[in-house]
Length: 106
Image (cartoon, rainbow, N blue to C red):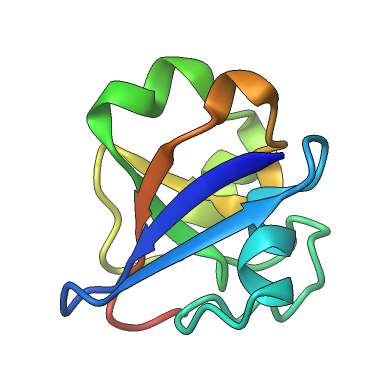
């Protein structure tokens, strides 16, 4: 099991525990975390599962590929630590991961 802390834009925290191998998006959706719309269901064809990965975790969440880069370009509140949660597959190494959610998904 992998523990993840989702922090909403207003500071509200949601601690979830999910199976290793699930996507970060699945973790949010299956646990009712607000702010993750996941309109495309995880096919990386929108940006409605946008999250901000805490700086200390960026090296463990993998590289942004060109398709994810293009989708992140749709977000008006993109930051250097922006990722699409559907593109992050959780591993035991990510136990304790902390991510923030933007105020709005586009």
